[in-house]
Length: 326
Image 1 (cartoon, one colour):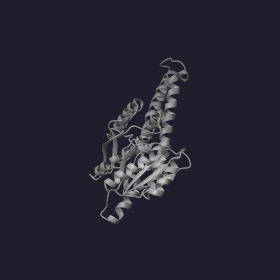
Image 2 (tube, one colour; image 1 turned 45 degrees about the horizontal axis):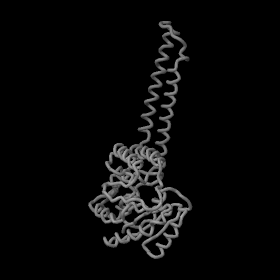
Image 3 (cartoon, helix red, strand yellow; image 1 turned 90 degrees about the horizontal axis):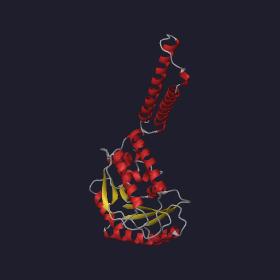
Image 4 (tube, one colour; image 1 turned 90 degrees about the vertical axis):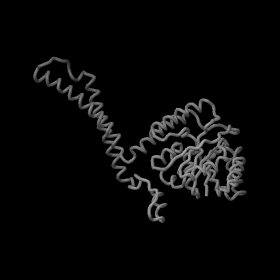
C-alpha cells in the first residue's frame, strides 16, 4: 500500500481538489493507498475540510497539531502513522501534480529505494528559483549525490528508509542525501510543477539561511556522526600546534636575550604574537576536549547498529527487523 503524507498549513481552498486528483490518479493506476493530512497549526478551516474528507472517504485520515511545529514535525507525525510499504510526501498547495504518482511508483519498482522529484520547469518567482539552484549545487558538491532539486518536497521512498533516521529542523529536504549516505539507491524523476492558485508561499529568505546551516549539520552527521573527534580533534590539533609553535618561538627569544644576552629585543609580553599564540593553544585544547566529550556521548548513548544499514539476511524473518533497527 502507498501512504501519501500531506502537510497542511492554511490550505483549505486546495484540499478538496487535491483529494479528488489523488483519488483519480491512484484509482486509474489501481494503486491501494491511504491519504494522511497533517494539519500543522492551521488558523483557517483546513481541519474542518480534513474532517469532512475523512468522514466521506475511509482512506483519508487526519492529524492536527496544537500549534505550528514546522514541516519536518508534520512529516514525522505522518510517517509514524503510515501503514504502507511505500511512503510519498507532497505539498498541499496543488503545485505537485498527483498525476505523477504512477510514474514515481514505476521508478521505484526499477530497484530504487528513494525517488526524488525534479521540478524541471519551475513556476516560481526568480528570487526563489536562482537561490535554490545555488543551494542545490552546494548540496550536490558537498554530499556527493548529484540531484537537480534537493528541495523538492515531492518524493517517494520505501518504509525501511524512514526507519533509518529521524527528521527534525529542516532535514526533510535532505531525505535523499541521508538515504544515500546509508547506502540506499536514490533516483531522480522530472515532474510537472504547477502554478500556485490559492494561498501564499510559506518560505522566505530565512529558509535558505536555515538550509545552509542544516547542510552543515547533515555533512557532519553523515561524515563524522560516529567519530566526532576526527574533525574536532583535527581542528584542535591544528590550532594547538600553531599556538605551541608561537610560544616556543617567543620562549627562545626570551632565553637568548635574558639568559645568554645574544640579542636585544623588547619585552616579550608586549608582542601581539603572545596573545595570539595563547589564544590558539587554548582554542585547540578546548576543541580536543569537546571531541573527547563527543566521543564519550557516542560511546555511551549510541548503538552499534547505528553505524551500518542491513539490506537483507539469510533469515527472511529477521531482515525487516534488522533494517528497521539499523
